[in-house]
Length: 418
Image 1 (tube, rainbow, N blue to C red):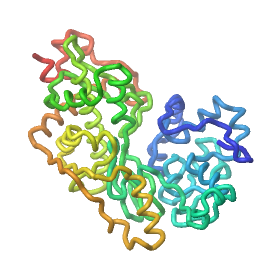
Image 2 (cartoon, one colour):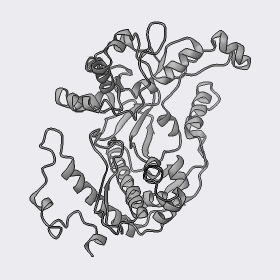
Image 3 (cartoon, rainbow, N blue to C red):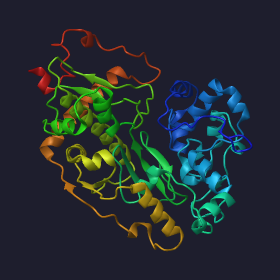
Image 4 (cartoon, helix red, strand yellow):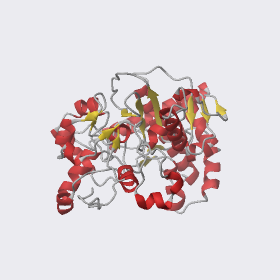
């Protein structure tokens, strides 16, 4: 938040700040989440603004009282540079306060969040730049004084102007209308195009947690050992929710679980099982996407951990039963921003006419797809036991779950049965 003079009244809250997770349960018991999702493309979750704003109102009342406007970091920087508060349709659609069909602030979502449209920046599409830097910055950067400054857009959307990301699956759709499938989010790239997909909070950060957080082996060594392990041969079932769950069920209260540990479990096995578990979540995201769009011919992958891990790319290809191709673009979002600016300036006839270069191709292996699919179903069974739907009694597992291990065979992998 900022006051009337543009000074911050609160700290910066990113999507990864889950302190407002307690508000999610209240939202789900008080309001119709499916109706909200069908209008906004978002969920009641700590990564979106309704939960964050309600949490701030409950915990930061003096700061909220001083706040004249709620803005994103992108808007804050744009105002600092150019002296104008404006927000792109793309950034607005990621707040959970925006009607993705009408391309306007959603009145019901604003009511839920406890604010009015006057507390938000005016909506502007991405093709309406400003060409007047503030005097301080114009003096500092005279070469940039009169160039057009386009509005910031969502980095996830930009990364998908031809490519994908490591812990997300997204597709851009040029449509007038889109039915929002449950389990997937829908944002806007601009007023003409939707971004359909899902994202996880985990990816390479889980590998870092094992190495830096637990002080295990060197990251590269651990990754090499994990890559050498046969699929689902470790005896483990993992729910990979170190930072809560986003797609596909958006359970902010979910936490990571490693089931099946024994005195013989090795660090590399835990890493391998966690990589597989994250992959299974991406398979669930793909299933949600495919409810409204045809199955793609391939997945184009970019982003740190996925690009640098051939084992993880092959794992994704096998689990999705789709070819996975790497992109050599190291800054996918920056490339997307440049392409969209060129399109707005009339320098690029069609956005899709500049196809990204492609690198190595990983083809799916049918025999391993079957192995991963069985493991994915086992993961789902564990999920259902530990995370029943909201509103149902929690942590009430069947009798077999508290009996001897010989009776609880459903969650045990082939390796654990020997």
